[in-house]
Image (cartoon, rainbow over all chains, first blue to last red):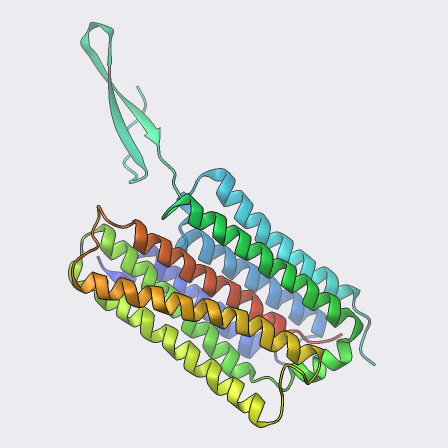
Length: 91
Length: 214
């Protein structure tokens, strides 16, 4: 078993890179708050999806379970973003 | 006759048909790791956290300025580092489960030990963060944002501590050679729980630390 050829290792490298991109990239003042927050939460949703599919092995799970857990991701991300855009601007 | 398919998620069932012809019938065996009851728990826990996320956003809706000011007092770098630590821990535990399935005895306990140690690193880092806040007089009673900060991260930390205990149990057993390709249900259950801990933090971190105001 060569660790570096494992799919989970590739996923882990991607997740680490995305985390660095959001924490030390998107969260800086280079982008408008709307772009930054939208990007940060969409990337977080993508990261959760890959943790579910590859670390939790839902990729090989029965379809109903896989769909149900991915609906959770969409619902949580949509809810957070809906509240964020509904929040009045800070003056 | 169906085409040959070699995925580990399929099994070939030989079926005798009249006149002695044997046909290989492919039956796909998709399965959840561990036991179904654990997944019911993971689903319920995820729903509870989803409700907490909604409640947090509802409170933020009415106090956006205050929430944003408090958010900026949190240590984003420590939060980002914690995310990297938990992702690494999750990866190591995923490798341990794969090593168990392949009967790679020498690697199982090593991966699990590193999984435990990275979990402990998260606890140490979170403790430093709590200490910094409390030493500046910030407690859950300070205001609504900090109440949510301590409640959400506190519930998550409880999950982390439970996960570390379970991983330590696995590590001790793995050193005695308890787990192998025919005994993997318990490690799969613990690993799935540990990945849940990881994914909840992936949402919690931007929710508390990175959510700028308009």
